[in-house]
Image (cartoon, rainbow, N blue to C red; front, top):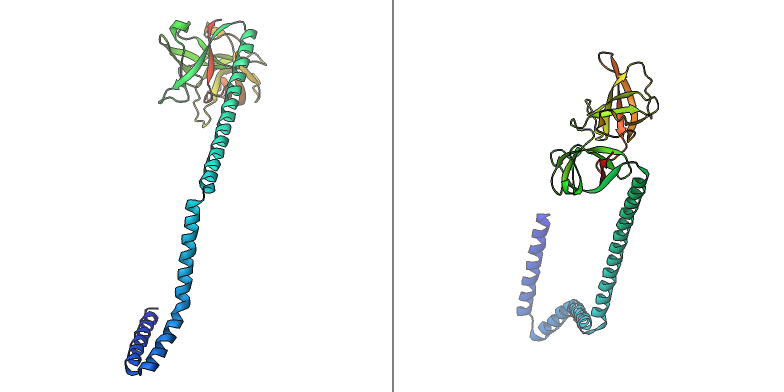
Length: 276
C-alpha cells in the first residue's frame, strides 16, 4: 500500500514538472491553448463546489430568517412538556389511589377486630438488620409501649415493639432471634414455638415452627396462627403457611418451615396493638 502511494506521488510530481517544462518551451499561442485546456478540466469541480456552498448559505439564511421554524420548535417543546406533566399526574393519582385503598382496608379491618390499635407509618429501617427491624412514626406520646404486637394493615402478624421514644419507636420483625412467640397449627390445634430459621434460606419470609409433638400430622399448606400463650400476642393472629416439615435430630419433636403471610420488605403502614 505504501509503495502504491509513493508511486502515485512520484507520478503526480512528474506530471507537474512536465507541464511546467512544456509551458516554458512551447510558443505563446500553443501555451495559451494548453492553459485553456488545463483550466477546462478543473472548472466543473470548482463549479460544483461553488454551487454547493451557495446552496448551504441560502438554506442557512432561510432557516435564520424564517420565523415559523423557532415557533414550531417552541410549540413542539411545549407539547412534550405537557405530555410529561400528564404522565406525572397519572402516576401520582395511581399512587394516591393505591394508598387510599390500603387505608380504607385498614379502617375496615380495624372495625372487625376486638382489639384497639394505633396506625403507624414505616419511616426507616435498620441498615445493619434491614429485613428484621423497622422504625415507626409513633411513640410513647401516641400510646405505644414496649413489647406491644405489630401487625400489617391486612391483620397479619409482623413483629413486636422493641424500643420506644416519645415520637418514634422501633419494631423487631418475625424471623429475628429476638422475636420468639408461641404459635399453633390452626387445623390440628397443635402448639409449638416460632423461632428464627436455623437453616439458611434466601427467602427472608421464612421462619421455623418447632417443638411440635412427633406424632402429629404436619402437611404443607396448613395455616399457622398465634396461640395466645404467654400473653405476648393475642390469639388467632395469622402468621403464615407450612411449607415442609421434618423430625428433629434427637427424634423428640417435629419442626416445620413456615412462610410468613406478611411481606416484611413492603411494609408501609402497620398497626400497633395497644389493648388486647
